[in-house]
Length: 556
Image (tube, rainbow, N blue to C red; front, side):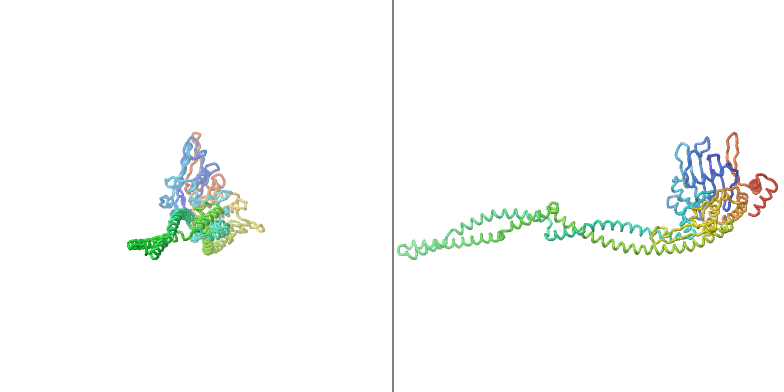
């Protein structure tokens, strides 16, 4: 509820304060008195742009302050608290317009911004001008209006969570599928490369190790030559034959040898025999060394063949031979990653199906409620339209479930459809052009909603009577009175019947003092209201007009 509105230094207004009340309030006054300034000021508080041109002549700063009672709007209080604004049931929005600097907007004396103010005031005040396109005529708002009427808030919160999970997983799954497609395009080539590399079974650092072995074997060749020379020299010495020759000589010619000579020769034969045995042992030792260290004389050739093979493979894949092992492992990893990603995609798609089923379970429940309450509000709107002179009017809330439409608001397309003339096509209400019909439809819609939803904020009608007959205005006045029992209504009007039904009545007027014109507002007493309504009827205060004004007020 709008508690008060304060305006300072805006166009013709120097200082003006309206203390407002619940129920139906009328604002009247001659054209040009300043009623539109009040409406423009409210729009500025709601987030409209304010230019320096609206400042009162001779002033450098303008001020607009609106005070709201939001004690029943728990959702808004929570939102404001969430953004760091300490709210104790009262919301104060203040706009300062400076001539020489940027304008500023405040929420409870804390600097804010226009975008956030627009967000929080979206459902606080709704203004219906003579031909103004309100949220009622914004197709994108129809589903929101129906959900408020259907009280789908909790279900929509649940749906939003489910949709968020589905959307996030869908996004990541699509990315995984894109990645998988890229990887799978290379998978066959990778597998062929892996099969090729597997045939060679290249080990980590194998080439360097082979080169080190080859170097070692080359060094061993020199050792082999030395051992071979020694073995040859040993094998070339015929010590055993020398021993046998001497022994044979002693045996055959012992008659010519002295005993001493025979003894000495036998001693030498024994020495030679012993030495021969040592030489044989030495020969066997070198042979064993040679056999142990150089048993595989073709190892160098095999090493060189393997090194050449590794280099050939490296040239084939155009990489350094030292990187072949890691290259092969990288290919294996890519294949594993691709196969693992394919499994992840399948699992994600299964999870998506589960999430989507959960989403549609809630979404279809919301659809049923929208269809049910859509019929209910349609009947209420038609009933109200009939009461305000539109007996042949038809209104319908269309709720079309669309399986392909997945959003945080559900899978429905919601349209407000109407037909005010029998035989004509039923059309979306935003395509209906008649000002009088639009005004009454706005009233009927808002009243139907207010019968169900009590925290509908403030509704302002600007000359709702435009283009309507006196009889129709009387009907509208009665509906406004009924509607105001549930929500606060402010009507800016030139119609005496509508003004006469108000609980409170403000008269806007202007006075000129010392060639300076100023707009003022007065909260009229009952006697002042009779005079004002009489003037609205006939332009004077004749007895007939005064009596009719009293009659109108007595019927309020």
